[in-house]
Image (tube, rainbow, N blue to C red):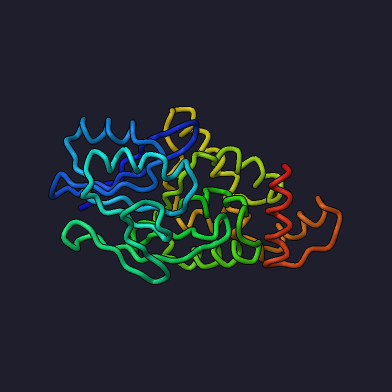
Length: 255
């Protein structure tokens, strides 16, 4: 069995720690800051077996060097050679941990950045800044087409897959989602659920693929009601699919 611990960092980042119940080993995902990771390691007497990186932005890799200085034998996985010793992974690669008891497949999901990858299996998706709850990452280095394709691909994963994204952006995303999809009853219920969690000081993440397909406007670009409402908001004709996604992303950038 494996458990995923939430490590808050900076203002709204999440670093994920995958803990093996049969040992004191763990895998750390996108450690932008070493300090909160080291606190958890000391408190629970854990040893890092590997670090997996989704993309090169500093708030995802800033703590790697300090963690490696503590233990240079940690394996680091990324798409680019960001550090001296990196195991390079690319499309359809598989990475295994804890004596091969935990395996993730890798997909390329360029859009937010060109080097962005995700790690997933039937239970878990670590998607960095590609998919957020009720939102998606800004398109910095890639194109709208690339981000749309990436999100479309992630939406094909099992409904029960837990989505571990890297930021607590959910409430802000929900404000935008309600603007563009106001008649979505699933969205209205989710807003109440997230509000309760945040009032209690609890994270809104992980979410699930099933939930995101129901409430995330960036995964609902073929929904007639959403497309019609967006057309009214922007006062121009918009086609479903990629054109709707591009219009949504541009609108959100300036929202």
